Image (cartoon, rainbow, N blue to C red):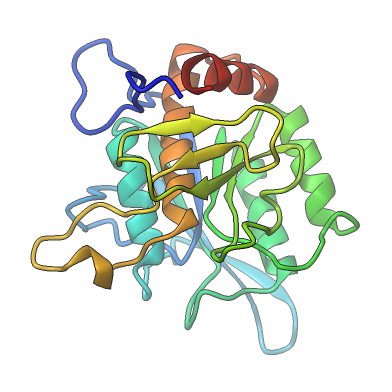
Length: 246
C-alpha cells in the first residue's frame, strides 16, 4: 500500500473534490437528518413489506430508529461533504430485511437516478440466481456504482459484495480512519477502517463498528472520484482505485 495515499476526510478547500453533484443512496435503517454529523438529507423513502405480503414504498418516511444508517451516513458525509445523500429505509425493528425488500429498495434507488448506492449490509445466501444479481449487472450498465460490505465475521463473505458488478469492502483493523488498501482482482477488493465517527462521551467500543463502516468510506471516496470524473464507469473507478491505493 502507498502509505502516503489517504482518502479525503473532513473539511474541504476550494477546488478539492467533495462529492459535488453526486447522488448517494444509503440503503439501511434510515437517517436522522438533524444529527450533527449528517446535517441534511436530500430525500428518501421507506421500503417495507405489509402484513398482507405486498412490498410498499412510502416517500419521506426514513427516520432512523436504530442509528445504524445515521452512523453510516455520517461517515459518507465526512468523506464527501458536498454529496447529495438520500436515505432508503429497509430496517426498522432490527438490522434484518428480506432479500426481495432489498431488491425493491435497489430498484427505487436506480429509478431515482442514484450515482452511488451504499449497501452496508450482507446476505448470507448465494443470490446469483435471484433478481438482485441482474439488478447489480443493470446498475453497472447504467453507470451506477454499487459499494457493499462483507458480512461481519471471520469468513468475510456475503452478497452482494461478492458479485463482480459490486465494489466489495471489508474492514481492516490495521488501517487508520483515512487509509485505504485496494486489492485488484479480489472479490472484496477494498480494505478500510471499520470504525464510525466518534461521538463525544461514548467510548467507541460501545458504538457500531465493522465492515459496514469500511464500505461507507469507500462510497464517500467514490463520490469524490466521480465529481472529478463524472463520466467514469465502474471499470474506470476500479482503475483509479488501483492507481491510487493499490
